[in-house]
Amino acid sequence: MNFADLQARIRDARAPLRITGHGSKDFYGGALQGEPLSTLALNGVTAYEPSELYISVLAGTPLFDVEALLAQHQQRFAFEPPRFDGKGSIGGMVAAGLSGPARAALGSVRDHLLGAVLINGRGELLSFGGTVMKNVAGFDVSRVLAGSLGQLGLITEVTLKVMPLPAAVTTLRFEFDQAAALMAMNRWGGEPLPLEASAWWDGALLVRLAGAAAAVEAACAKLGGDVIPPELAGAFWLGLRDQRDEFFIGAQRAVAGGARLWRLSLPSTAPELRLHGEQLVDWGGAQRWVVTPMEPTALRETVAAVGGHATLFRALDKACGVFAPLSAPQAAIHQRLKASFDPNGVFNSGRLYPDL
Image (tube, rainbow, N blue to C red; front, side, top):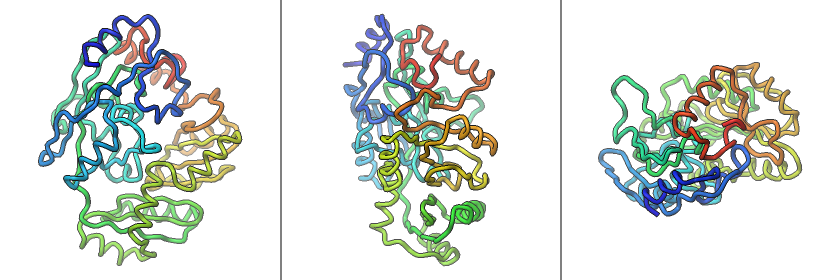
């Protein structure tokens, strides 16, 4: 299927369409509605310039294939998008907007999105951005697509910044409770250290140092802690990235029993939250996961009291709403964006909010 075929189907749609790839993130967001519109025929790398640090990829291309190509040139997506069960497409990666352990240090999907091609709700083919970071005043429309869950249109192609693999990587382990781990992460985050990722769970804080060999060696000497063997450290960070480590496996079992897995976005300096349930902390304290049977309103109020918001990541019942309620001005912006890109409500109805 080429772009023209997709444009024709969208223009002729008489019922809502549900954009889908491999289905790896069907659990995320609101309930699935509409006739499936697959991106899998849009497969392939359309441009890759390792020396210029960018790659352009069709939306249905498997993320694994693209990362294998980057690895051949000692490069990577620095935002470490999760690859649920080895599935996932490039378009779904951008639409979901999820990032992995290095997000706090190296940026999110949105930060690395240079350009995009989109078919809007009128069946028009639109192109935004380019192959370099913007260096002029203005807003890059392509970045609105990151995390939009397909609400604004069908992403057909994206251009992303890539980064070299670090010369040296070391993981250190510290025995800390959560309060001490939060203090350490915030203190170290303000120092000139090659700190790329950090995560605390079950009494242990792990930090990943990455960069020039001399800088990593000096940071290890300064911080102390126990050095984790590379093979064990690599397995840990991959498990955390792909949400298949021990915490997330246990969380999925709890969700099957009626609990909820929440993703909390907070100021990194927020104190330890006394919540009923098991917690995992990463992004220097700015992202916290909690699996809990707590009543949703009480949890959201607790998180809001320290300047954050809560997203219902996995649950059997999502009647309480997946994403944090919008203020009136925020809701108006969402409605105007939807009306501009998809005036007839063709795409992914209800994935972000019930009225979009």
